[in-house]
Length: 128
Image (cartoon, rainbow, N blue to C red):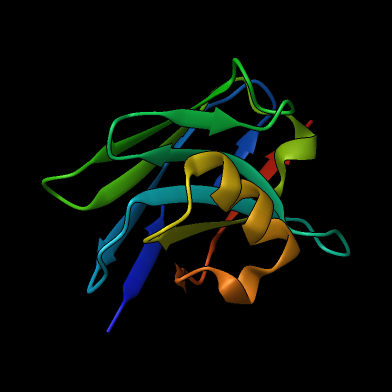
């Protein structure tokens, strides 16, 4: 059974950094991604990566966030630098067997039930 477990969420001040981790098990996947959802907002795909290292980022996080993946450990990371209050949200990881990174970001937003697996999320709060 697929399991995605996120960790690393915390409360930080603006300008700070956090590193999120997602441990993936029980799933064969080709792409993995990070999404976030703030209260009352739609889920937003922010970064995705495939096994070749091809990445895709939302404009809102380009230059500040870096996604990486350790294939041997089946672990996905999101390094978040220069955090802003607008980055406050619940962050989710997702993985899929057939979607490309960019497709996973788009499909995960428009049809999340069609993505193979999701984690339960970890909270990030950025204060000004």
